[in-house]
Every structure is written in C-alpha cells, then in structure tokens.
Image (cartoon, rainbow, N blue to C red; front, side, top):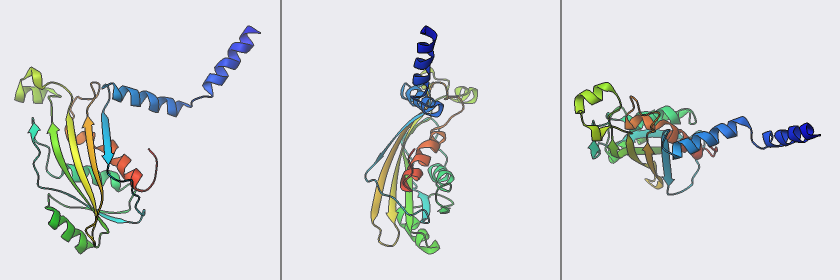
Length: 201
C-alpha cells in the first residue's frame, strides 16, 4: 500500500511540469542569479506587425561611452538582422552606420515599410580571455560584459514612431569567457522579433 501511494504521488508530481518547462525555469533562475547571460527588454508599446512587412535595419553613427574595447561598427544592426530574418522574410540591413535621415531615405528607396533604427547606448567589455588580459592587465576589469541598446521602430512613409525599445544585457559568470557586449544581443533580439509577429517567448 505504501509503495502504491508513493508511486501515485510521484506520478502526480511528474505530471505537474514537463521537462522543457522545468529546463526553461532553471535557465531563467540561473540567469537571474547572474550565472548565465541575462537581458531585460522594455518597450513603449506592444504593437504587432504583419509577417510580410518589409523592415530595413540601420544603426546610428553614435559611439557609446564604453569601458574596454569599442564594439564593432554596425554590430547591433547585424545582430538584429540575424534574428529578424527568421520571422520576417523581407528584411534588409544597411551596410554601415547611417544617420536617421539617411536610414529613412534608404528604406524608402528600397520600398521598406518600416525602419528599425538601432544603437548601443552604453557598453562595458570586461576582460574575458587571455588576450584581453594581456592588453589591459587590470584586476578590476575582470568580469561579465554589460551593454544597453536603444531601438526605434519607425513607419517609413509617415515617419510615425511606432515603438521604442531598450535592451539591457549582462553576461553570466559561467558564460563570460571570450564574449563581448554584442554577443549578448541574440536572445533579446529574437524575443523582440517574435513579439512583433505576436508569438510568445
């Protein structure tokens, strides 16, 4: 009788949560505790776009106040492009940094419906490998990378600002080796693209 009650209790507990939910919960708590990469995305509006919308992605000339090496030019636009192309078949990226007016003009010339205009607002690229240690040799520079990205989603024809986004990302203690602030942008960009087409995380 005791083994029957125990087996029923285990089956009931096992049915409460499937393995993928449990894995996602563990990942969330480990990233919140600082062991894995973590990001926080804040949006001004919760808008949705048609999946067949044509989006032009550009990055500003702005050089962020940074500690450590500067991020590569157009890094945010490249990362946004890599993740948006999974959810929007019509996506184009600027070849290099552009001013806002240049980005809107180029988007109009290719017939894009929207401009996603991005920039790094702040970066802190900490020492994460032997080469970086050799360059800086400062104990206080060891640690996890952080960065803040700002984005504006603008309708091309009307120049109407549809959404503004702020992504704050932080590396994790278990994942900081050989990382840079731009390497942390993949998951939050993917989540933002998914939210624009109305898909959950």
